[in-house]
Image (cartoon, rainbow, N blue to C red; front, side, top):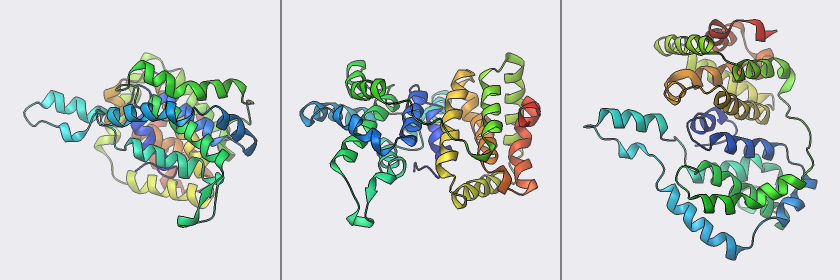
Length: 290
C-alpha cells in the first residue's frame, strides 16, 4: 500500500494524521542516510527487553486507528469525519516501505536470500521506532511515544547534517512552490480550495496524468527524489494550516499531482504537465514556476 513509487498515497495519509509531518521528517532523513551514519543509529537502538513492551503497545494502538470499517450508514456526519481521517495504509505498510524501500540500499542479495548486516538492521529498527511513534500519535500514549522516539532523537543530535535534500533538475521550481504554500494568506487559501473543488468536478485525464508522472519518475531513477518532494509537501501543507476537510477533499491530490509533475517536468508531454499544473497555477499564480 505504501511505497516510494506511490509516495503520494503515503503523503495523503500523513497530511491527514496529527503526527504526519513528524513521520514525513523521519522518511526524509531516512532518504538521506549514508553508510557511515548506520553505526551511530544502531548504537542508539534500545535492547529487546526495552523495545518488546513498546511494540506490544504499538500493535494495540494500530488497531485503534480510524478505519473505514467503522462507517455507520445511520451517522452521516460521523461517517464523513471518518472518511476524512481514516488512512488508506497501515502500520505494517509503513514499516515495509521503510525497511525495503527507504533502506533498500542496505540489503544484499535478492528475494529470500536478501539480508542486512547487523548494524544496518539495528539502524533500520531505530527508524521504524521513530516513524511509528509519530504515525500513531493519535492513539499512542505520550510515554510510549517518547520512549519509542528517544533513540532517534538522540541519534539526530549526533548525526552529521548530511547532504541537502535533492529535488532533482527542477529543484528550484519545486522549492518555489513549497515556499509559496508555506506563506499562504487567507485569500490564497480560498482560491486554492476553489481550484481544488473545480478540479474534483472535472477529473477527466487527471489519473492518467499522475500515472504518467509517476512512471516517468521510475524510468528516470527519480523515485527517491519524487518521494522526498512529497514528504516536503506534507510539511508545507501543515505549515499552511490547510483545513483537514480540504486536504481530504481534493487539495492534497491537486498539490501532490503538481509536485509530481514538477519533479519530472522535462520528461512530460505538454498536455500531461498542463493537466497537473494548471489547477495550482490558477490558484496561486504563475510566479513560482520561474
